[in-house]
Length: 172
Image 1 (spheres, helix red, strand yellow):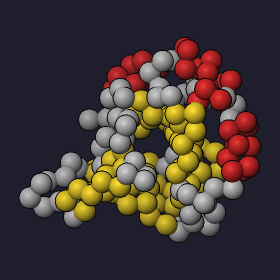
Image 2 (tube, one colour):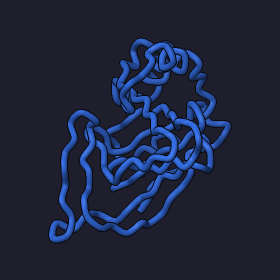
Image 3 (cartoon, one colour):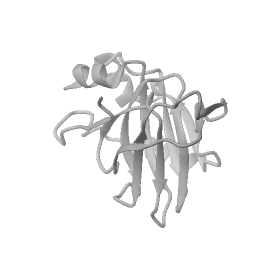
Image 4 (tube, helix red, strand yellow):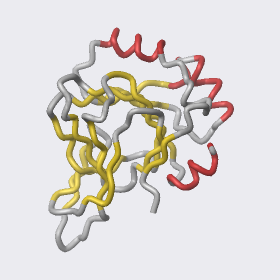
């Protein structure tokens, strides 16, 4: 089972200039941890969408405050994603992946405002990594994010309906 794959530093998606997206994010003065934006409003993303039509028409900017654990969940509307650090993505933050929930032990709680389903009850951590460079991740596997740093962690996340394996095959 594949949970994530770091992109080579030379891959064009690793080299994506996100200055315009960073500026847009800062101009929004976000109050929500999740911001969804139309990729068609950013020329660099339009060009990539034409090259890689496997990505959704919207992308997300996710912010996790310092010293906060984002709970175990899986995402709606995407099975995988390209995640790229924007601000303060260091080894002080950790994305953890877990086993699938057991209906006899776990409960699922949809949270439409964040477009996720929370997984309640015990799960086993299978692996983890720190998002410090462009990476592909599975969003259909239960995962959580801990920001143990002193500053908010902010990432660009562009979802796809492809499985993580198919996304990797399409891009590498």
